[in-house]
Length: 587
Image (cartoon, rainbow, N blue to C red):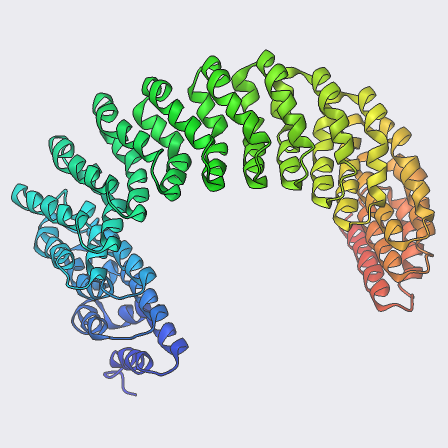
């Protein structure tokens, strides 16, 4: 091919591949659009590539999605911001396709391009595009139009602004619920660009229409608009316009709408301010906590701590706590689980006395719940309660339940307890720990579930770091070393893992005198899995012990293992020997 024809080649390949029956080839060529545009140059990209893409009527959604994404970052390839308008036609076509994710990506790309366009180009090209989409015969175009108003509106002259507000108003009253949903979703973004005077009149009337829509799917999207609009309005307007809507929504006949209110309640409280929250939203929230739909109670229960933070403790104790007590014995395990995940955060809000009197009994009932997730959620947040009521009370009231959970039949609950033990140990102190929890830590090393044994070895390491090598030498090491003769090889493996984790904490002297001899003995084990793990542990000990110990004790064991009949044992032994040689060379 001659040098003159060279620039034609990429577009020829692209056109061939875009018409190929193989979707993967079509996808690849779309994803290489930027490369092709660079090869063609800015002018030919504008005059040939973009028109070609506008005419391309591929019917595969994956190809269209890739195209919508690529065009969003295409401004540099068409000659910069002054030529950005040439990218609008192909994206306008993509805004009308049936597949939602393609339309959403096209709208996202149009927003990205529109936010960089010059004001004159927005008025000449972008706003007419929005108007065309909004007047589209097919609902997909009208849905896409809703997402573009917040980009088009700020740069429009006053007459056009009035027209755009009027068009948005028509979209909010469209016959198709999908269009009204899109209008409700984007109302907050559009409202943020509208002037304060028009916000109170035009936008609020649109909002009120949407909140009274006969489709619950539109009303529940209007709930999100409450929080967004509330932040734009003055506090008194917010109380006048937004608050009644929230209160009505909390009693809506559709549980989905009530669910959205429960989910968004904290944001809604921020929008209306603390005083109206106390007077008007507390009764609404109490209603949601006692809703007859479990999904609504789940959403409301998950926000209980956040909501209490807005209130003073007296109000929380008077209104919210009775509901919390009811929810702790709710018929739905998911409600109890949602409550358990946040209830610990109520302790700092309510203070010491209320926590001891009112919350501790609830914690205890949730710790004994039959559903493991409920128990798990309580265990993982115990430190929040400890800060409020102190370790003595916590240990008297909750520790018996924790000990019980340490032997829970669900391994995930046992795992959560193990992960909490080092924190508990640091809070309880060494004396208390030895009395109550020491035996449990050893018991877990012989658990039937590997994840528990693995967590138990890490737990021992963290305890040794917390209480120091001397304590570990007395309370951990002897019991771990006793297990090395266990008849089951999996438990012997756990001992090896525990030794490899403890060695760096215990230091060179104890490692050489106590731990290393056990490992050397284990190198003569009959099970290959034990032997290659011995090789790994010996390798991990090389940096801890003196060079003389490496040569006298570790190397001979590894040499012996490197001649083992099992291929894996030989591999790991040779790897460890290589490691010794590397240390020798570097020193």
